[in-house]
Image 1 (cartoon, one colour):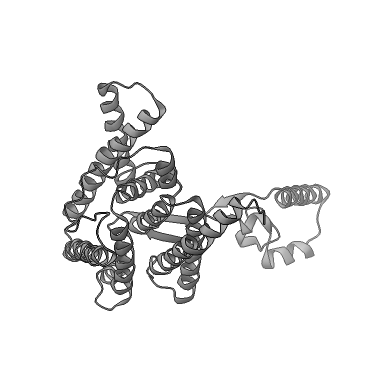
Image 2: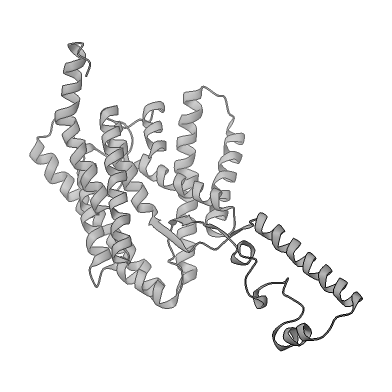
Length: 359
């Protein structure tokens, strides 16, 4: 979301003369009435949701019949084209805003390495932090592309996708629910672009924190146990045997004292992880980007509203312990706070500023 806000404020991306997406049937004009804009935006949103339904259904069918090569080929090609095309467009506007001279050969080499490196990190092997960075960049690039869509159409798409997300995840025959159930049944990862927020825990090894544990769990166990220990206690010891036992006991006590001072932290496997689809990040960023195109105050209120909705969704996830839609609460709160801020708070702040009244 921060990347989208920065792109809107610091980059000059043409919107009016930019080519519209092919699925936009209604081309919004400033001279159109509110009713015409509303109907046209609803039609565009319906077409967009139908496209999502078709794509998700194809994905579910391929996953059900184990067409994994087709799925990953589709995802790899889509990700590479997104990073190469939209990434090149945004990079061009960045170097244009920074007034940096870059020849087309260098530009091509940079974008080739950027796009191919992203595909390798996401779908094959790479550091976790680098993979997450590329996933965030993919969602940011998609959101930046959506900022070129007209305002009424943007709000209609956000609301339509949020409503569809509820049915797709919660309904028994919803495509996303079927996909999650198949993945859980096969114990197989979902073939999609997911942001995995892993909760790594550093825990102290119990054997090292508690060196006084029974002998079977410690490498410093007594040399004589059980009946042998009792027999050794009843057996008279010679001078040499007594010295040997004392040395062993002293070494054991020294080892336990050293272990009690040193606590070794062991990184365990991620027991809990929260996985969000990149589509959720995309539409969060689209909402914040649309708010950034109006005023900085709407950006702040929408940003807080989206994070609040995400926090409430995580709370519900902890209660119900099943896959939940991540869009409805955040999009609803963000939309409500956007219009409340635009209608009430922004005019109030402007009026107070004109009157030089500080609150």
